[in-house]
Image 1 (cartoon, chains in turn blue, cyan):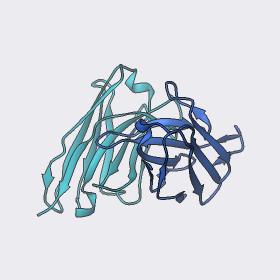
Image 2 (tube, each protein chain N blue to C red; image 1 turned 135 degrees about the vertical axis):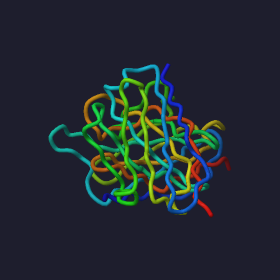
Image 3 (tube, each protein chain N blue to C red; image 1 turned 180 degrees about the horizontal axis):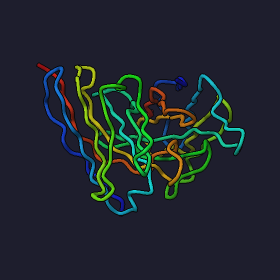
Image 4 (spheres, one colour; image 1 turned 180 degrees about the vertical axis):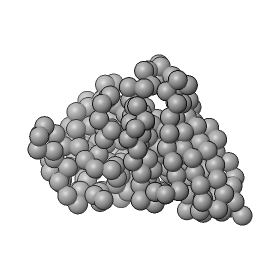
Length: 112
Length: 122
């Protein structure tokens, strides 16, 4: 199985500042035939199911604010939350779907 | 509007069985692979199983292979998870989730149900 590791486990960011979450996979999730990275990001707020934010590593899901952006390729990926808002407090998970899906351990984002 | 309503969670003894259901509406159910993902209290997400739209393709996490069976009834727009030989470590909130696009089985999950709680304890 592909192991997905996120860093940091938690971070506290001031309102209006930028939060950066990293995700590393144990092997490349870039599929050569279509040049797509099989990597997605979810946001989970307390008591709620996860919400899809980003797929194909950098494609924002419809309705997701443009302060959320994804980048990276191969084995190293980043979720960036620009101008952090109070409603962005949540746990964020990356997940690879190149093979049977595996999730990162999650990163808790709080307000400083 | 897409809706996924999971049910069937309960308290069960170790070694027991349980069947979870997920009633789907708001989309052409048979066109999409469906998934089960679980989350133990205070822990992260763990993918459990996926079934293709037609039901012929099934995929399982190693942790449940041989004990859990995923299935679907496209005439009833319902997804199932038969859970046998349950262990304490299977205790979790079980979410059903829909693939974002039709076709491939390995895709992101765009809609999730609220989950149903399975507790395995004597």
